[in-house]
Structure formats: C-alpha cells, structure tokens
Length: 202
Image 1: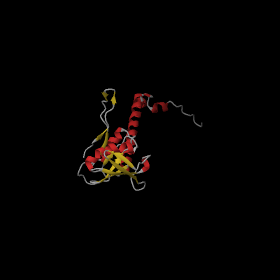
Image 2 (image 1 turned 45 degrees about the vertical axis):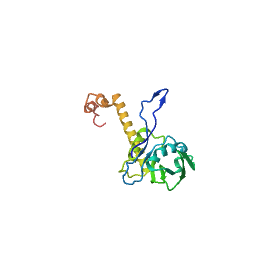
Image 3 (image 1 turned 90 degrees about the vertical axis):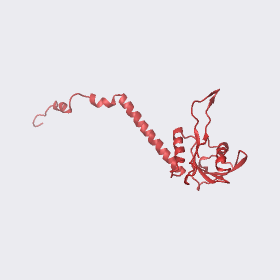
Image 4 (image 1 turned 135 degrees about the vertical axis):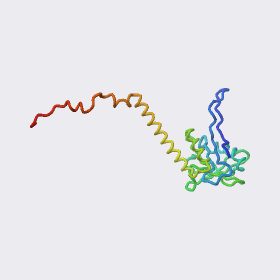
C-alpha cells in the first residue's frame, strides 16, 4: 500500500499555493509481515467527528468497510459514540489502560484489525514526515508511543546540534576563533621575566 491521503494545496483567491500538499496517511506496504503498527495517520485536529470521515473514505476501499474505531482518551478531548461517514456509521470506543495513547485501532468486517500511529496534530512537518516513513517501514519494531519518543529524541538532538552550530558561527563572526592569537605577540615567559626579583631576606 502507498500513501494516499494528502492535504489539499491552499487557495488564495484564484491562485493555488506553490507548497506541496502535506502527507496525512501512510500505510505499510501490502503483504509485509505483521507488525505493531500498520502505518501512520496525521489528523489536522483532535476532533474525531471531523477527522474520521476523511480517514475512512480512504481506508474503506483498501481494507473493507471500517465499522469500529477505538482510541485512548488521553489525547482526544471528546469521544463520540458514533460518527457518520460516507454511507454508514462508525462506532467509536475507548480503552484507557489497554490501548497505547498514540494509537488508533480500526476494525473492518472483511479485513480484521489495523493499528495506526496517530501523529499529534501540532507536530511540525519534518517530524511528521519522519514518523510517517518510520511507521510504514516493514522493519519497524517500536510501539506507537515508542515511535513518538524516538522522534522527540531525534528532534531535541537536531535542535541542540543546530544551536551549537549557530553559536559557533556567531563566535567566529565576532572574532572568537582568532581571539587567542591576538591578545599578545610576546611569549608568556617574556612577561614573567620582567617581574622584579625579591632581595635576599625579604
């Protein structure tokens, strides 16, 4: 399976945005070995009533009609019991202790169960793209929360590296790199040689 769900380009008047559409769903390749995660979904909000219809519109033709969805309530402020989608209703349930908070579980009459990593809506584009790719990798071994934690560590490390690079650039631009060579042209020993020698008995 391939990525099939994108954001539509923004429209301003009659001019389409030149920015490429953002990937919102990526699934593991068809026929790969079962894993903890079958792909990743990046919803635009935490409103299940608004988000589920677009998701099921893509998944129904691929997996068969999605009939049930379960979430962990940790990141969903409101959990409706039913959500009307194209031509049918999806029942929504939740499990607090039993389900990974970063996972969406989907059930279909014909295909069984599928688990998607839910990427937080506020995630930046670069981190979301990395999570999409990792979650759809056939060699993946992490849970949904494990993928989120790994991405956060990667983001923090990248920010630290960028900060160090910026600080070094500023230091160099202010003469820091050459400062140690311009303080004095005389060797340290010469300065010490000019100190007065105390008289005997002092």
